[in-house]
Image 1: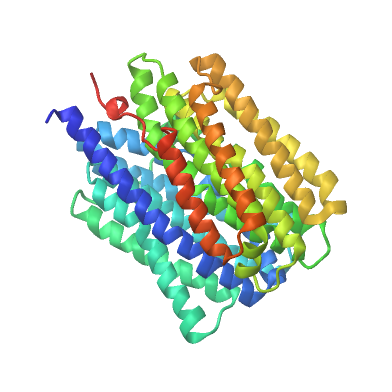
Image 2 (image 1 turned 90 degrees about the vertical axis):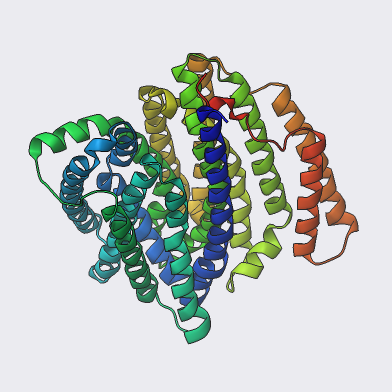
Length: 481
């Protein structure tokens, strides 16, 4: 077996393992932990937490500033310098942590958050700090060729959080936002200790401070940080503005959070598939090869999967929501149903984003994301006071489709790719067939809704095989010729 072929095989094995781990743990966390936490504490209290979480997420970029992406590339190319590089990055990140905490506290004061919120604010801030640190530490394993360790560690903290919070929810029978926050802090801190112990066996760990080194590092990583900041802003503004613009004790924010959580969980598919495609695009572009075939294959697969998810959520929104949330009503159902319409654009935009990240052409999409922020803020400001949580949903739909269309136009100009090809038309036909099946089940079949979803899923898989959709992109894009 050639070295390139071996690399492609290792990559595919670890991607499959990564997908399996995330599909097992993430849904359990969302459906049986987060949902149950909101059921126990109520939509008002959880809505306050959700507003604070989104507020902190607006400044989450400060904790990384693109360092993780740059670090992965640097360590992979300069393994002999990893110990020295690690020490200066750690020193830089400590400075960024202090800056982040200062910014969220100052911002909270300026916005006018009640003083009673500050305990939660600092707790959420600490969770984000620990999460960012853990992701940075994990990036060293794949960069140093320890792929399996990186994959397993990626699911460790979520698994431990599921076990710890599951103990409080289902065995102790108690839960509060305080327990929810502090449990996450302890568990993520524990997983960081494990990562540090494993890394200490690979190279010497230390911390150093250097203004010159920090400045050089941030200069190289900032373009990627700007992408992260702008994406965070136009996807997280809704929760903050709902909590701030309405005087309903954060109830609308809680209703929106219920649907947003499920949309965000579904978007894991786009994110994981983007993880698979990014190195393929980078390899093809570095060799000046066309990415059209890879784009067509990837976009067909992701469009079909995301469209099937949207169909199922549209037809079964009511039983899904009422099964998950104790105090659910028609508002919960409407918010969830239409947020999933936005999910279709959000997930499919991930492939387009991969193209720009792989090529390093970030200026155009940063401008586009900036426009998305202005549109999202304006629509939220106009619609939320009158339409509450559904106003935020409308803003999300418009923003996500605007950004998706804009990214496609830019990608078409830069990479000469076409979205409307025979692969997509095959996917559209397959989706239409599954839609007919859904209508048939709704009108003529009377059985438990979860069984109907399972059967529709099996039919969708069969249809995908007959239309040639269910296949991964060719591994040649991972291999050097």
